[in-house]
Image (cartoon, rainbow, N blue to C red; front, top):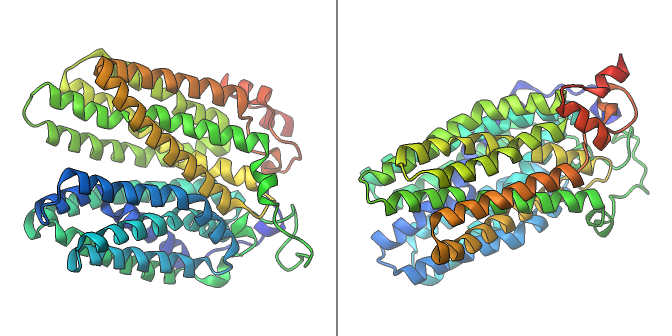
Length: 442
């Protein structure tokens, strides 16, 4: 919806450059380069698998329990740039501690620190973006942010690999600390006066600017927000999406390795990089489709990819085929990264709880991913790889059906100047190629 909060928004090129740089380098530090922790602790400090697993579990658990509180913190903080800069500083210190004070106690504390503070990045980026460009510009800008993020993922993987091979695994964490310094500098590029604090948290009431905001206005109560049926349905859909998605790529790696072919690690690394490259144009395209078609038709494409990918992964044992199929991950994940933010913004509009809801989505993502790996591991152990893929495909099909039936279209006609929300029936028509919003406007 376009409100007074969105009028006269002209963010400077300097602030927009700051968003670009933040999106690009954030992948270098989000999660503390978790995949390299095991390699570093095993090769340099000779930790056994049990202690390495504990370190990774602590980081994962700290992140999972911190996602929603991190969103609430970003909502509460008027100066979101400062919160983001502090998160970068904490992750940087934790990364350096991994290298220079790598006792078991320090490593565990560092992993907990990195896991908990890195959860600020997503809500803070979403809030700064909305605060800068407003709801009318959020779709296109989110697509651009995600495209830079995926490009950063590719660059981070390549740079980390080169640095790790040439300077040792410990140098990767020094690189992460350097990237945190770059992140703080990029945060400073964003001009604080251009980030409307009310707009950045989803506003309080429709059609009211910050200057008009009454002192009595307050954000929606958290229990009321989380009790909303549409929000609950969306959170369940996110859990189901990642329950069907998260274990799929690791399972492909295990299936390829079980064939005994040489070069399995290189093939998987290539698949990961290629999927990230696919996500770049998909992110840009899905941001446009989500604004033109609606959130639901665009998101349903991402949901529909998952069961197809799962069934195809069970179809063959040929490594080349399995790796090629995983390029579909670039489509599903590319759509999810953009549209999930837009749906959260739609659902939080006028509540003043946008960043909190972003944290809730991240919590649902982490919960689904954790359950995916856990459940799939038991099924594969009992019935084999193909049973695992079929189970994931079945869950993905349930996720698709659930999202179709339970989550309505959230894009409002008001964004085009009208005054009603799109109904589920309208959404179904849009899937068939008809856009009732445009017809009504004309």
